[in-house]
Amino acid sequence: MSFALVVAAVVAAGPAAPAAGTYDTEGAWGHLELKKGRFKIDALGGNAHTCGLEGVWKGATGFTDGDDVKCELKFVAKPEGAVEIVPVTEDACRNYCGVRATFDGTYFPPLPGCTSAEVKKVRASFKTQFDAKKYAEALATLEPMFSKCEKRLDRFDQQWVRNDLAITAHHAGDDAQCLKW
Image 1: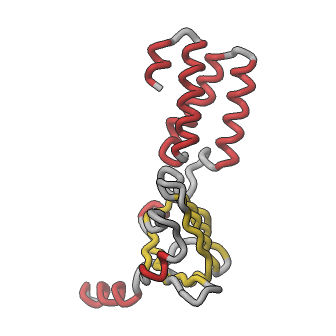
Image 2: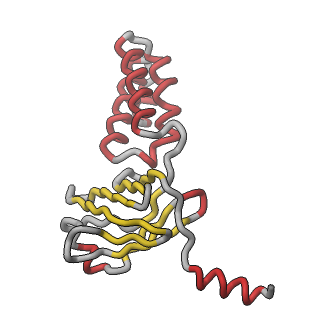
């Protein structure tokens, strides 16, 4: 088969369909679930307005269900398992969001060690060590998780962890490190 025919076949097939699973944006402002022919999207705008929509998912296409106004989406598989969400019917899709909130963008599969449950577990371990005044151990527990997961934490969790790291460094006698955080 010639190169031109291969390219034509790929273009005609449309965008590649993403895999079922859960995905989050960098900064954790958006969450996407794709499973069993269904999608669900929750997003938080910078002004705390939200987007919430769900519906039918097939291949690279999604449609909201329920309301008279249908939002059509494209779910485009990207490198490293990411999914780009593109609203096809932009005006209809805006009906699912508050002012200055949006859901379109790139969503990523969870990083190992960075799921909500895993972060919660690390933070609980950190707190136990901090409460026991084992500051070096507490830093050694929390800092690697934060370095790895920072981009996937929402802005509030980022600030919370930075504060924990700063106060722990101070208690450990390392004020230069405290100021770094």
